[in-house]
Amino acid sequence: MSNYIEEVMTKVVERNPGEAEFHQAVKEVLESLEPVFEKHPEYREAGILERIVEPERQIIFRVPWVDDEGNVKVNRGFRIEFNSAIGPYKGGLRFHPSVYTGIIKFLGFEQIFKNALTGRPIGGGKGGSDFDPKGKSDGEVMRFCQSFMTELYRHIGPNTDVPAGDIGVGGREIGYMFGQYKRIKNSFDAGVLTGKGLNWGGSLARTEATGYGLVYIVDEMLKDNSQSFEGKTVVVSGSGNVAIYATQKVQELGGKVVAVSDSGGYVYDPEGIKLDTVRRIKEVERGRIKEYLESHPEAEYVADSTAIWNVKCDVALPCATQNELDEDAAKTLVENGVIAVGEGANMPCTPEAVEVIQDNSILYVPGKAANAGGVATSALEMTQNAMWDAWTFEEVDVKLKDIMVNIYKTASKTAKEYGMEGDLVAGANIAGFLKVADTMIDQGVI
Ligand code: GLU
Image 1: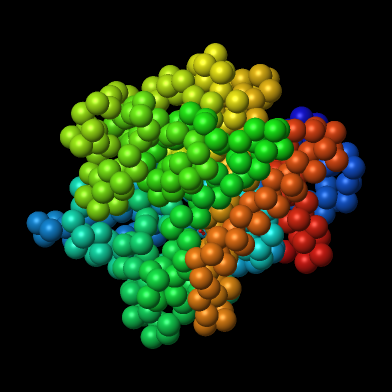
Image 2: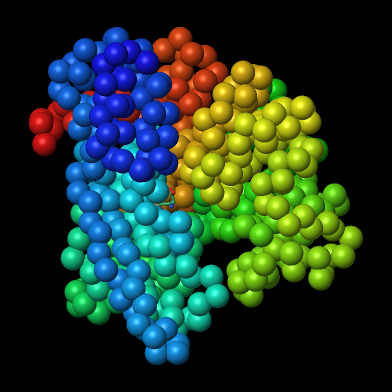
């Protein structure tokens, strides 16, 4: 890192104490930018780095609600509006007990560059709460979502800030939040949230988009290296929305997914994961992945989710959560002959794991590029809402695929231009940064 970039990084650590995930995300981007600052002194003069690492606005609020037994509960709500240079703040809401400022800031920061890569006019933001939806009744989730939106509504809007789902926030939660927003505002602002139900402004293929998009971009990377998913053994961590639709698309393309997981452990089914069973357990029953064995006793369950990377595979798709794949796991994957890694989750590989993967010339597409299909399709949902129209599944899916192929091409072209051919981390970071930085120069010091 150059002295200047290192100084900015040191300040980020000093000014945001205790926010390890945010430091990690910023460092990863800044490390890629040295050749950019050599070539473009104007970015330093305009203070782009100093501005881009500081959120435009950070909102933290109390979320009080009453549980089924009548007890008053208090959670903390967050919305970090990071960068609105190229469009309204856009990014999901995460409901998970691990949520604190450092997590939301890392996610919001990543979102700036990811969203720029999609080619759609969306800025970067993220929000959520330390509320744990696990084990809560529908009534409790509804009362929590209503209380959360009772504060959040004043900060968002179709042209201001457009939240969506993330871990712990799916169709049910978006429904409760949209209902409360509409009730408070007395206005059917469809474009204020994405991931909506199909009867009320949602887009076909939004549910599938992150998982499908991941597989489209990995497929493009494989093709570029004269490979394909046909006949490949694939491990997908997680069993939420991203993992489920990544598995479905891999299976469609002739690959075999042999393992999926949740926070309790992983299931290994050498004959190939039966997706109907996973969907029933996760989408309908909201149960645990170990229940897979009740329907398929021939499968194995290991009560250690990170041990999933010991399963031999050709392609690894981490789709669970941040830092789920560490250095040792990466070494094991390499020893077992992995040829490609695609990140469905946000920052699932630790920096040490990425180093192992890249040092061994394994094909690797980082989350910022690989999981952008979800937010890209959210932007397509916003377009449909603005037109009071709805496209067919095929129309959306074709656009999604196009966007993912474009992201791959942009990232690989940019990496090549800056002398780092094949390094999609550098390519994605630089391409995303350039678009936002140029816009920030156009718009002046704000
Ligand atoms: N939570 C997703 C992400 O990490 C989607 C965000 C959205 O659709 O706004 O990109």
